Length: 435
Image (tube, rainbow, N blue to C red; front, side, top):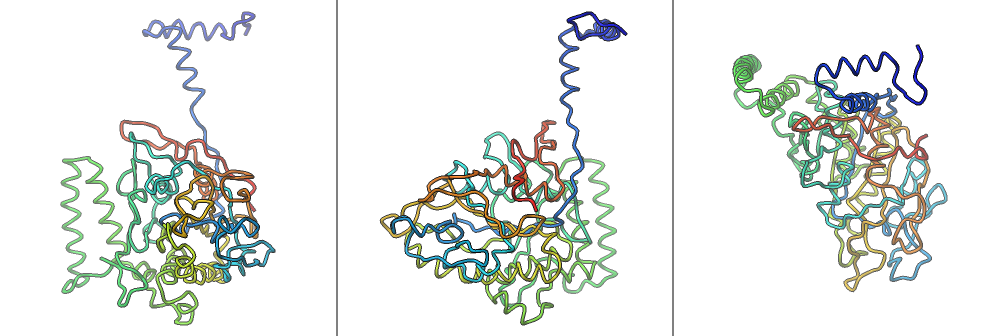
């Protein structure tokens, strides 16, 4: 077949355009159709390195200087009062993390996280979705996306929050509410801990339980025929998952933290940080795909040294034990652990001996999930005021996490109004982090 020089259209293409014109399509319409076809995305298969994620969130804005990125050679008004501890890799953490320093060879720390949102809500949105907030659209959290892409495993909810949904940005956004997290409803560290709605109500035996289920299925079927709304479909999904939990001894056992050895519970710490992280390990080992837990309050505008000394020891003990325990259980390499916060703290100590909000540079700690071990990525400058090397945005962190889970981050999901929205927009995989 010959083509006219200087014209990319073949005779067949001209005939196609002519036929299209007969259907009311102009030449420009035809070119737009061809361009649209060229832009249809094809998603390559990504082999998952991680099967689960434990997201440990430190709400309030954890100070990088007093945790992962001390500045011992800066003037005291920048470095603060705390000293450093040498890690088992030869790097330095704050002296607040002596136990974690002993497992640094299993960690991957990003010291060059950055974004531009100094308000708690907006920073939190960034670190739970990989997106900047938008007045036009609510974006889904990491857990909701993972739930959407993979669904339940072993009769367990794919996405669990410990003890409760930590903020409005940990929800489903524009996705169906059927991908919402399951919340424990109680703190695993509390006396008489019991997961909400996980057991049969008093006076309801197994036969009555199944009769109720049959009746509910009939009602749901009726409403589903009358109303195709997301709320009806989501409620049906919730009921099905609730029945799976209540009727499965294995699923119920996953939440039974009392089944853990007393010595191991002591090793984690009989406190909020310890028991929440132990519960997280128990859940991912049982089949939950993502566990999000929170610990402490890190908005330390005054007396930061005293606040760090009060709050970090529990975290240090629990986190170091979690990493060792995941490794002992043989699941560290398939479990991606992420410690994040909405932003960091100001380079300079303020007049109240604290630090204020600072999104320009902060740190995130990672472990497992097919990432490098004993690795520091990027750097902040001498006063921790901005990245000096390899800045990383929330979209890059999210894209890398999804990549390790085998999820294509620029895949488009459908938002209301049939709007295709990428899971993450503009992020890149941080290849230097990959093992």
